[in-house]
Length: 80
Image (cartoon, rainbow, N blue to C red; front, side):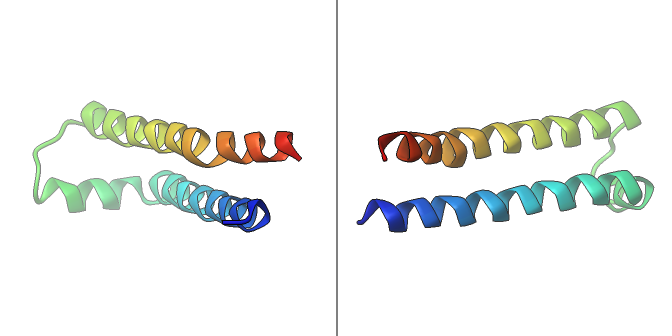
């Protein structure tokens, strides 16, 4: 695979993943109570546990984006 193609794939993957992360954060910030009620039907979670799960999930997702999209992209740009 050509490095130019791989660079384009990584850039688009980075964009899509950050959009997903931003939508997740906005949905959590705007509709937290509704999301908690929906999840409350399936799981019994305290407010603190619910918040910790979502913030931990967002942190893990962001770390994965940096590790699997941004770091290889920077390495490819550095090789140019």
